Length: 315
Image (cartoon, rainbow, N blue to C red; front, side, top):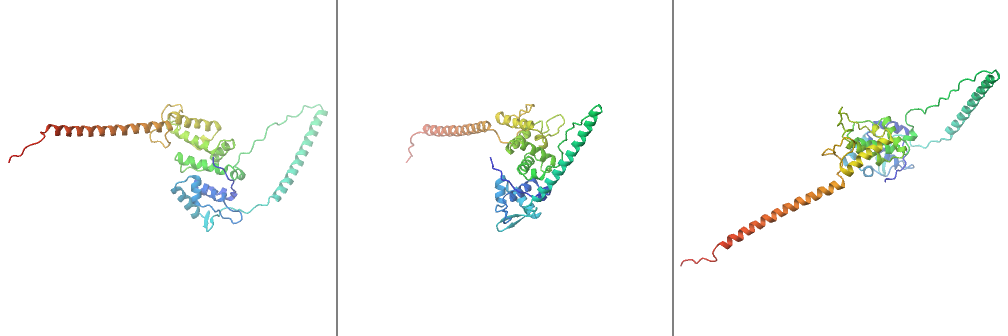
């Protein structure tokens, strides 16, 4: 399994990632990952980036063209220089002092509120009045955009890799990397599902005839948001892929074999069966050629034996 190297990507660069295609986002993240903090130059170029992500030559060319034409990176004698984002170190001591001050103020205000509530309860008890109802409603965790810490941490780059893979495998090249899709992928990664497991789930969804439109409505259900909506979905689609590898069927409940000409490779058992059939076919052809040669040779020898051994020429 490939080791993940932490990369610092500035917040303003992440905010502008929508300007780039997913593959270019990976390319810029790769440059930031290997950027030297002193020189500001990443010694690894687009060739190393393409080898790292197993890109084709066309993908590497498109990424290089987009990042350079849109002035995200520039080539130098020592490598590539990322241009978008503030890479200067931030002094967080003042922010921490400010946060500590705010926390102490909040604690003071909460203690005052508790004191006032206690006095109200005391007054009710002294006057033999019924106690007021207590609001036990819990505060919900705010549903906003993912924090830059999460996007810039250990999950942002793998999530982009998963999305780019899903785009290519299921031919959703025009799909956008929305916050909802990003959130679903990152949530599954945080639960412990690896990038490779999610990729296998994507393949399993591709193998399911029902999810590829062979249903009553003719609708495809293969969005990455659906695949990563919950952990059980990852496991279900992974089961489709494993069932196909075992017996050549998607096992999604329809009993329909995977369509001919699909993008997924044949299983080992299917490959061995195909190679054995090909060898048998070649052997039969060789046997036919040898048998035909023997018949020709036997015909020639029979014709020679039917002739007289010699003929005397008249003088």
